[in-house]
Length: 449
Image (cartoon, rainbow, N blue to C red; front, side, top):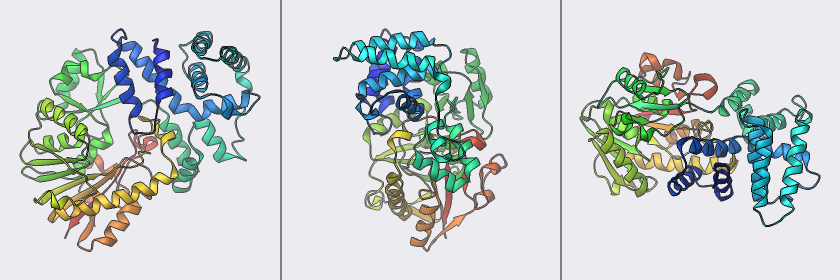
């Protein structure tokens, strides 16, 4: 299969489970040893590009065909989307090559007329690309922003209502930028300057992040990090800058007992272990044994010996399984992920307005279970990677109403000087892609009085 065929197959197989396409592509790459790293990067770029711009691409198709859009078969539609993404967003791919490859793909479908249809539609669009019309940006502002920036209209309206029209538009634009890869230096083995020097020796240009003291930005690097010697030696972990900042907000100290709820693959678990210099214990709870296996692989590679995995459902009573109480608790609950759309553009199509209320209720449930394990004067940090008042301030307000012995702590009194710009007027941790150049995160700190 060609890279374009692999991209088409992935789009045809996609489902709504988080991270499905990444896992699906990894499986496909493992099966085809002939693909080099450049081909793999091209496949990922195509798939993510279609997801990033699907709403605009579909608008162009709707404006061109002379029959109902819903009559186009899904496989044919994905062929058109792939070709149009290359035509409109990939300058290095000639229009002719994109059209010819799409026609070849259509020729492999059962209906022999599809290739002619695909050829005609794409050539017409290439000839008349300047004539494509979008909704009126003044009279139909929300509709225009939805189509032009390729976001579901419910999300455009939500962000406009919560942030204001100008900030919302800047956020939409920022979420469509292809992000640089950000990694975290493993201070158990090396400092940031040493890591940057090692990466330079491997031909990778890297610079310090603006905020996180351990953050490193890999500029224009699109290859797999697993092939780097610095990765194999455990000198760094892939982790976004906002997530790195979150660990600092918890204020871990050497000798602390820390509970990391919903630990996932352990990015924050291993960071907390490094901040404590492995002097203490980080209990990492996740209900997925598969994720915990991945977590332990990172623990071994990074030398984060103070981490201890526990398989458990954080929404169930944790105190029946864990008898210890903790100095610090981190709750990074499952959320809509609206702050990490630039890295996971499929969120645009897989998350709906109805998911937000459901997830907010789940986050409250997890917080209510975790707080029972917090020691007197202990601190609990609630973090999300979303831009949604219901999942952020709404959850905080409900949590405080339900727990009289828990008091909020203003993070501007705790955060180091380098992080003051990331704390809002209410003392919450809040980052935006269009303001801070990193993922959209929220954090609130509590203390048991």
